[in-house]
Length: 242
Image (cartoon, rainbow, N blue to C red; front, side, top):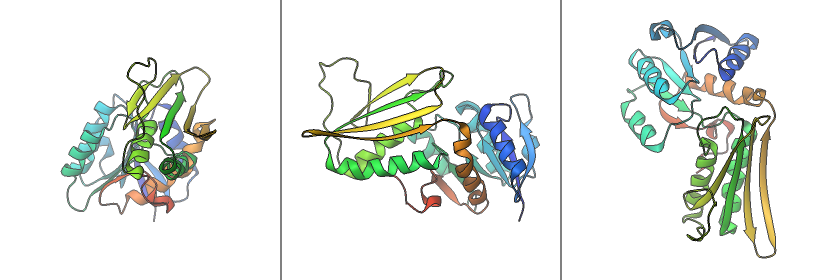
């Protein structure tokens, strides 16, 4: 079966990569490449929409796709829990959306490992770095990692002292420090502190080609998806990170 894909955000870095993946795939074909000046009607007839735009455009694109019977994969940052809850309530019966905070297999595995380690440590912090063009901070991956660690623990770790300054944004009880630098693609470290030791789980992305496997998996799974799926954890057979 050949899957017809509409790409929203086609002129960006991720959109360009996705079109390359489609061109090199035997079971994917490009239906439409949508940019900021495109009409949403261009996605009509596609099997799947993959959206890598900005949150305001993403919400509109996904809504249009669902209204017209098209399942969606979303790689856009900014889908908060509140937005996800609203989206889940609006998905028609028989339709599906896969929202992917990070398409990197290594990043997903790193978060999964962090949820295991988090049960053994009370002192936990996250340091994430991305390229200087990334607007949101902390990253969606860092937020999801912090929330997943606390959920797996069943409680939040020891919070930073209120009198300590420059400790980052606290997410689910975990300080998250964000860097935005030229020359960086993506780098996340989850640092656990214990008596006489530290443990660091680190994942680095050197090229956006690291997202290839995850994008392919999500596009293939989207054709039969129903309801809301967050992350590619289940597609990798490791279960939800949280």
